[in-house]
Image 1: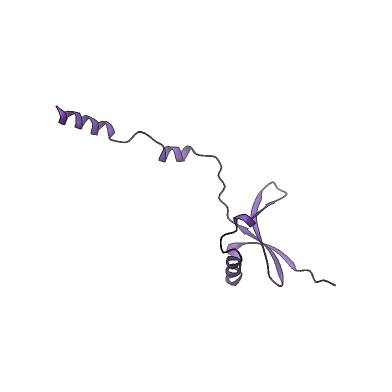
Image 2: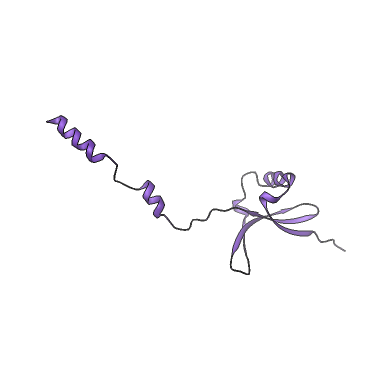
Length: 98
């Protein structure tokens, strides 16, 4: 008779240090290609990567930054073509040319 492993869903940050290190060893180049989306009955979801030890089969929750399409703040900071003080600099250069 096969012995079933205990199953556990746990955040990476809540894993014991030794297990965290073992997860890092298993996924040395990152775990993006191994992530699975887990949908909860409430409609929420999380991302996790599988990891197994001799005793436990883990789904390790990982933090994922999701692009929510809100670029308004980014546009405000990075794509503003108007340079503060540009008019004053232009006026000063015109006066020097006279």
